[in-house]
Each structure stands twice: as C-alpha cells, then as structure tokens.
Length: 514
Image (cartoon, rainbow, N blue to C red):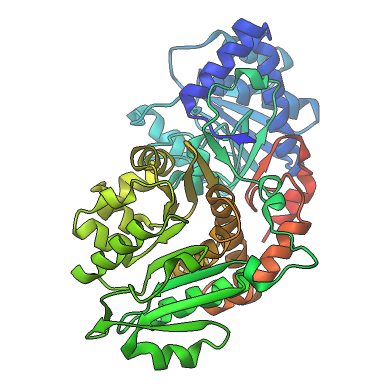
C-alpha cells in the first residue's frame, strides 16, 4: 500500500526513525540528497544553481550541490538572507565551502541548465514572507529546468515555485496529490530514504496503483452464463436527457454487465430504443416526460441499481429515489441529478445506508455539503473521507483526481486526462460502477471502476486528441483499459508520479520530453 501523509504526519515519521529507531538524521538526509541528485544527474546538466534557504530543505539542496561538484557539474549555491539556521544546514554549508563550491548571497547573472529549489519543504506554513518572493520569482522567470526538493516552495500559498520535477521522500504528501497544488509539482518522484514502515503514522489514506487494481478484474468461469455476470437496472433519461442514460447503459455493457435494463419515461422509450440495441428497455409511468413511479418493476431481480443519470430535479423524483432506497438492499448508485434532488429537498438521511454509493463531482458535492468548491478541491481527500464516515454511504468524489471513501479509508486514483472535462464522462463512470457493483463488493467495485474509467479516458485522448475526444471514444476504449491494467507494471501509479526504487530515471525522463 502507498500511504498518503500530511506534512505533520511526515514529521512524526522522521522523528520516529531518528528518536525511536536510532537512524541518525544525517543518514536520512544523505539518502534524500542522493535521491535528488539522481534525478538532476539524469537531466544531463552542464550547469546547476542551488537556491537554498537556511532550514533542512536548504540543507538537502546544498548536499545535492556537493554531489554535482563530485560529478564535475558546474554548480553554484545561492543562499537566502534568512538569519535562522538549522544545524543540518550549517553542516552542509560548511562541507560545500570546504570543497570550494561558489556561494552567492545575491542573485547571480549567469544562466543555468537546472535550478534546484531548496527554499521551503512540506512543513512550510503560508503566507510567503515578502523577503522570499524575489527568490520564487527568480526561479519561475528563469528558463532553467526546475527541480524542487520535497515540494515546490511556497505551496500551499498562491505564490509558489512552478517545478518541472519534484523529488520527495518516503511517502507522497497530500500537496503532491491534491489540486491546485499538484499541478505545480511537475513530474513527481517519491524516494525511499530508509524510514521504516512501522514509523508511518497514518494508514487511512491510500494512493491506488496497478498492483492494487489488477487482482480486481473479474475472471469468468468457463461454464458461466448471463445470469451470473451482472444484472443491473439504470434509471434516468427524463425528457431532454436521453443521452446521459444512453451513455451509462453503453458503458455498462462494455464494462461487462451481461444484462442491462434501462428504465426511462414512457415518452422517451422510442428514442432510447433507437439508441440502445443490446440493452432491455422499461417504459416507466411518467408525467410530462419525468418518471413518477417504478413500482411496476420487481427490484429484487437485479444485482445493482444506478439512478440519476439524465434525471432532472423534481419532487416526484425524490419519491422514486426513496422507493428504491427503502425497497432494495443491494448496491444502489446515486449520481448527477439524483444527488441534486437529495440536496434540494434536504434528504441526506437517505444516504445513511452502507449499500448506497454516491458519485458527485465538485459542484454536486458542494450542494450536498454547503462547502465552497475551492475548499473542496484543496481538501478533497479529507472531505470525501469525512462524508463517508458521517453518512456511512460510500463515495467517489470526482475531479482532477478521484477520491473513494469506503471502509473508513480514503483511496485516491490519479488516473485520467484533462480531455475528460466534458459532459457525459460522469455518466460513463456511473455505468461502469453499476456493472462492477453487481459483480463484487462495493470496495472492489469502486477501486476498479474509478481506476479503469481514468485509464479509458487516457487511452481515448491519446488515440484522438485532447480537444476532440468524445465520450463515445471513452466507452469504446474500455476494453483497452482492461488490457492496460492487466499488462502494466505493478508499481505504476500514473504518468507523472513514480514511487520508490522501481524508477528508471533515464527512461522516465525521456518519456516526458516534448
């Protein structure tokens, strides 16, 4: 498992390694220094500038300068004018001076291939003091490749370094994962510097990798039949919204559901029937194109139900949702307008059941909770986990990352593509998840479904174009997403984050060159 830590939890792990286990701090620091140098060296620079503040982050950066010097790379060090110096900083600076490395206290005028950002680490608390802003601006205005030690300096403030590479240690931190700060990290490397696993204080926030997902792909028995491979019911497609339920249904079939039933208002049955060939259609009682009842359906025939895709917001819709929640004890997925109905009519009590799964995007979650959207994005892992713990339902909170709240833990997927920022991708996810909910536990279904959905988006955008990818392209890419997971290396997390000692630095560097 790859555990995500807050800066405070990382400090606890450091103290544990030093004070309880007995690993000297300079040993941990040297391991960190060497791991940063490995990345810098892979960039093949001829000249490097280290910009260091006077704390331990700066000490790490100065240590990297020493390794550059040892490998005949032209390296200079720029020290900030901060007065407070840690002992580790003093030690590393004295070594650098003894080697004869150039030390500057004012901005040098020469140009460098690489700048190493050693101003602040993950323990930084905003705001950035005025005297440090020129250093951040100098880094961001340079044409050099920027490598940040631990975290781009200034995060989580608005005035921060924009790195091309970030090298951090032991475990990924929340700022490496959550937006908007993650986008300033560039390519992220998390290196093992010998902090023992027993020192990791938090195990309830987990970053998903291929290793976690690969075993979850269903394996069909040779003598299986359609009754054993998922019988699901999708309800939605009210007047004007037939596209949403259609995309969900097609995604469900591609994801492996053997029997997909689609319930739509009677006014739309003809148009939906023209769009869906493999799926079975239900004509439901309705008024003015909006479903009013589903009591003519025997819900117990199904293994999972999904509702809300192309539903609209209306009072009778709440009664339909209530009927399902009160009469169906297997997994129920509520998405889109199903969630907006619950928000509008203040019916969050409906979510207090362990068989309920909700899949809100940031706007829908804001309406459910009353939280500001910006606050949700910056605290996405915590707010999703807190909501799951409060209401007992499972949640997949969708944004640039997806956070799954399940079994009192948060699981994070970083898979996906900016091309997915368009209407309909959430409907595809609902279809995929409802299929998996019919075949396996809620926990397994959410992990596999969210991860697979992201890879389908990556695959579709790579085959078409970031701007022109359609939702149907995503659906058609679901089979390739399955194969990708089956064939990928276990340690893989995503295209811009590499964990521990499995990294081939030269290969990774070449992969990310334009």
